[in-house]
Image (cartoon, rainbow, N blue to C red; front, top):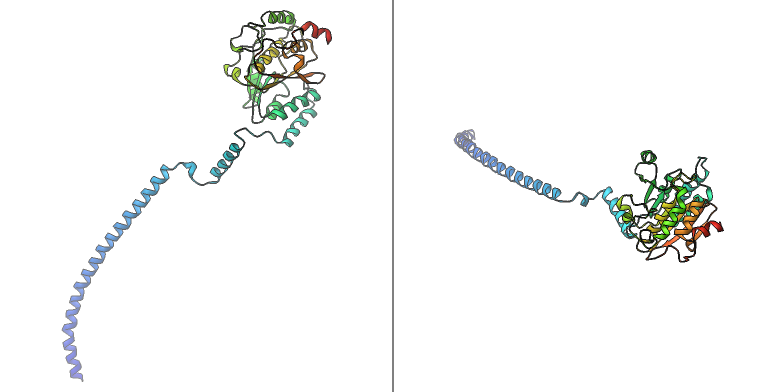
Length: 328
């Protein structure tokens, strides 16, 4: 058995040595092939990875950022949907906020503020028509209030004092205000009215482009774009008119009357503050007309002026400034 085993060992030894040598060659070849295949595999994986990244980057770059799903884009879409549902018209100020602003303004102890009944009358018109195109002659205590109540609309202020305009704009960022160079005086009212009557079919006609008007009562130095606006509400609360030497509101009332009639269609609410004063009362009767008066307080008159062609401001041509003064 030992001999056999020894023989087997002798016989197996060369075979073992042979196999060992052969395995070394085969192993080297196998390892070489494996490494070769692995390199190709890595190369292929790298190529596909690079191609995938390139495709992803190209797609991301080509897409509009607004197409990417995000909270902001969802909010924007919701707002756009809401806007289209309401045909693009801005939403009015919420009623509780509207009322709070009015009540705060009424309870304020500031000097020079509008009387409560007058303030609430103006607020009532804005509650019905806002957001709208609002033109205000005069800057004062209520300026921020009118702008806030017309939230979502366009509010423009006109004043005779350019320094005051600049100061108010500085305190109220985004406020749209312009200064107006008035050439009239309260003491000139009779002559101005007489001239306007003589030119009723000419320069002082009720429907015209004020930008090119030579009527002495017309305000024609405003920014051009303001003459193209269909004003829904016009509040005449300026310029100053408490003394004979102040500009008075004759031009403001005449201009408001022409703007309302020249808007093309619809109607304009025109409110005249300090209507109890002679100049405001007489000019309102002359250009805004008693038949258009829809509401009044002791100091504020509310006229509803309809647009359209007209040869006269008032249908009752016998109504004159002298009659208005006599019946006051």
